[in-house]
Image (cartoon, rainbow, N blue to C red; front, side):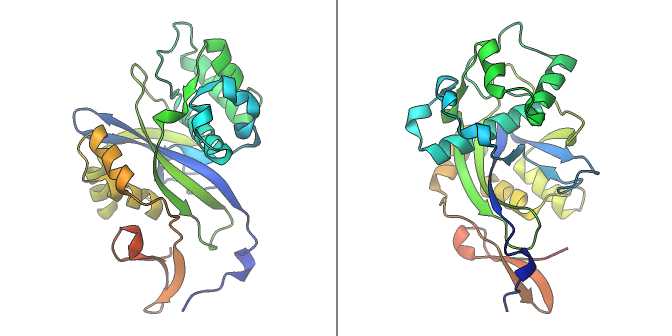
Length: 261
């Protein structure tokens, strides 16, 4: 029996983007952030950097601040720009193939710049323009798309992308939304979650599962290319007397039934 969530049916579903930053070091590792335990959204969980699309992510002025603009439709451009902006806000990484200029902000100055972009008091386009940088939309590889079921007061239509760690850059948490970061292989992340040593939510966990067979960046991209981009829309059902999240096996994760906390 499917559970009606009439009180949550009118919650807007917001477009969002999330990025799995990967490196070969020497094994394939993915960057995961430890959420602050006091945040209002999934406190204490381990997530990939990302967030919802902002109005400015679809501004036409982005055409002169990014590479690949003409290769994507408007909706895809805004999702990719949101992903790149969120990566900068949460990790300080700039997804560009170009080396960062010598005078680019670092330390406390970079944290202040990131906080300004997050608060909307500093334009990410201006940050790039002043550094002589253009972000590259082609650096993002689609992995999957997930839509939050009507069981939450925050719902998202989230695109998961892959991206390689830019050469010469290292991520840093801001201590606000994220209090720590961890480079971890997909297999190790899954094992730690099974052992209850890490709090990894279902969509994050299954995206890790979808790439766990890869051992290099190239293998990961090849796996992503074979995956369907049809939206994963978990259902809320009563299974054996318990309210559970159920995911159709057609999405390639096998039989997934997980009791709601």
